[in-house]
Image 1 (cartoon, rainbow, N blue to C red):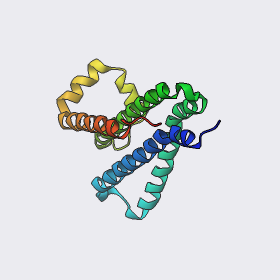
Image 2 (image 1 turned 90 degrees about the vertical axis):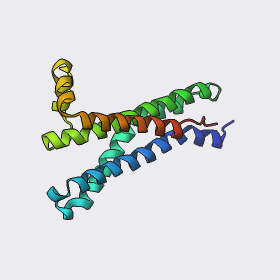
Image 3 (image 1 turned 30 degrees about the vertical axis):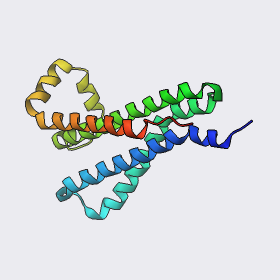
Image 4 (image 1 turned 120 degrees about the vertical axis):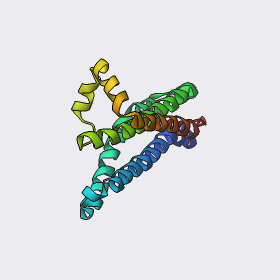
Amino acid sequence: MFHFRLALSRYAHIGRFILLALLLLSASRCALSSYFSPRLDWSLLPGLLLQGLRFDLIALAYLSMPALLLSLFTPASSWHRVDGLIRHYYRILLLLLLAMEAVGFGFLLEYEHRPDALFWEYLSYPREVLPMLWGGFKAEIALTLGVIALAAWLGRQVFATQVD
């Protein structure tokens, strides 16, 4: 027998994650826009925000796909075990998203654009990059660690309850 409440509850984490991530990513985009306002052509801001929302929705849909597929194909008898796995998955994603936003701010200040392939290439040389970062970016490192702590707390609050 199909239980409609169970079917809806399986997707509650996905909805919470997407709404929370959209809120946080949009707030980050607005903060970046206001910080770089002298460089910004304000007539382009609505298009910038809409394009950012579009990109965020696409990225979040891809990131949510593993949990969605797991939710779709898990039998009701095993759901409680899978529910915990999905909650942890979204906590980790939230941590990564917010950490990337925090790191992206410093990268934008240094290189005048958001993290790209160059960013990931630098990470393959930790012996050279880490001393350079520590030497010149202590405030950004502290900000990133603070954002990660905030994301961990927020993820714990939002995804702490088990969905029945």
